[in-house]
Length: 287
Image 1 (cartoon, rainbow, N blue to C red):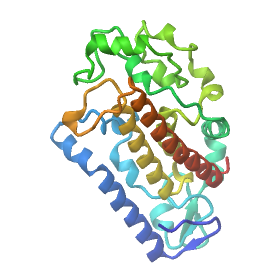
Image 2 (cartoon, rainbow, N blue to C red):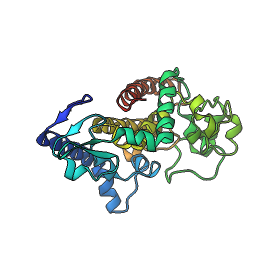
Image 3 (cartoon, rainbow, N blue to C red):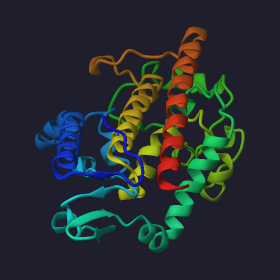
Image 4 (cartoon, rainbow, N blue to C red):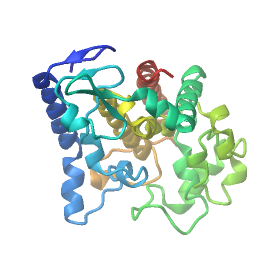
């Protein structure tokens, strides 16, 4: 896909083709979810990106060129879009200065968090135990799926490990019995000081932050963020205590030495992709 530089000008046939290709790619990525939703069917892995983040599939279809790119002939179509402005006679571009001014608190918060996470060393070896801590010594689970090791076996895995979660939005779902077992108590105010690029949930959240930056983020980075979040979610659940083999997911058994090694290997690869994406987003939005 064409990567745009600032101050580029795109002829109508060029940017329309890019917008159409983006929408088609988004539709491909969300087709299975939309088909299930039409039948009121649930999926324990893939639905997460549309329920936890509360963004409908349609938002992924909207293509933006990013700051500084003039779309020739787009004034009538996009001049009325929020965070767009007309240029000359009949052209349009993203009103990035207006976005930064009017949404300054959000802009600074998002870019500050992305920058802090990118610049911090990754911590590996949590082994995805946050999902185990969410069902620890509880009669309830977050999914209507059997636990691979049963309740007692799941509790035993948590008892045998040190919980090292650094992500508040995972920590807040720990059972009361699991909370004091974490290395430190987490709160939302401390997120910027704790988020680190080895965390799977921090990597998934790049998708959320990209959407919050709206038209400042070019379409290809939005697609990249969604795909990264999807891939992270898969590892997250394969390493969880749930038995997802009937759904086509083989487990990453983090209760074994081999499973731990495989988890960390994949965790490092996903972390590297997240770091590249954070850098690309910060570069284009001016963070």
